[in-house]
Length: 122
Image (cartoon, rainbow, N blue to C red; front, side, top):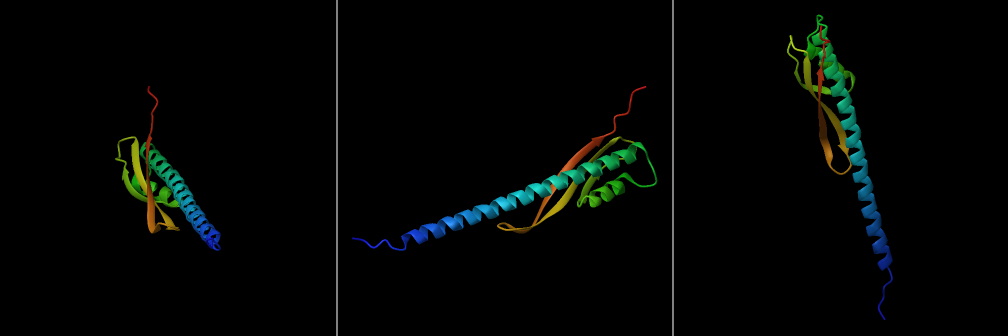
């Protein structure tokens, strides 16, 4: 007869470790998806603000307006293609994800958005 005492505890410990790693991975995925959603919101707001400034010029440059709106929503403006005289603003915004449980820190997400002012024809 063989002595199998203690083998169940090894299987349980391995199962608990696998479940823990899977839970940590799921938490990381949720955190990245939430950051990506927030980053897209920030990019959308920045593009709309720049396009509005292009359509209704004031004393603020469209790129500065886009930078302001990206920052208000927690992002950092990476680029803004918003030439005066046009009615199209294309922006890219970066947002830090923060510390992840399995994949370390220093991760960020980037989102882009395009806003075009459609002027009514006369």
